[in-house]
Image (tube, rainbow, N blue to C red; front, side, top):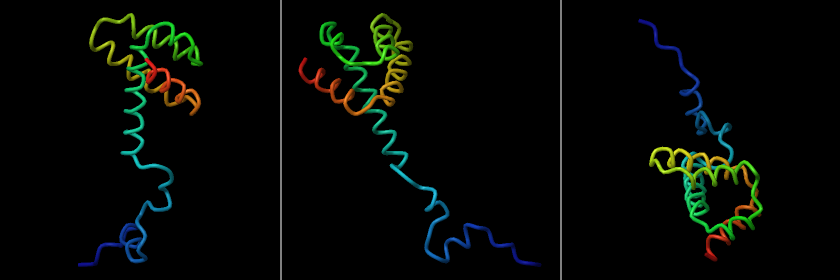
Length: 108
């Protein structure tokens, strides 16, 4: 019976490099998920922020509307989905905006 042909994974193991070493760039999936969770928690704090502090923040209009909508919602499931959406929008923010939101939450 003939031997099985060697796959790319078997060939990569001989030289010491893994099959995806050249493809991995940037943070790991766990690090990205942890950062996303932290931004979602910051979004929850943003929803709980009082109106005066919220109005002074430099936020994009889409994020501002999403926060106002989350304050309006009463259903647990709808509010949870809206908070996930806020977390997604917050991933698009630059570092200065995120720092401003953190400072406003910390000051409250």
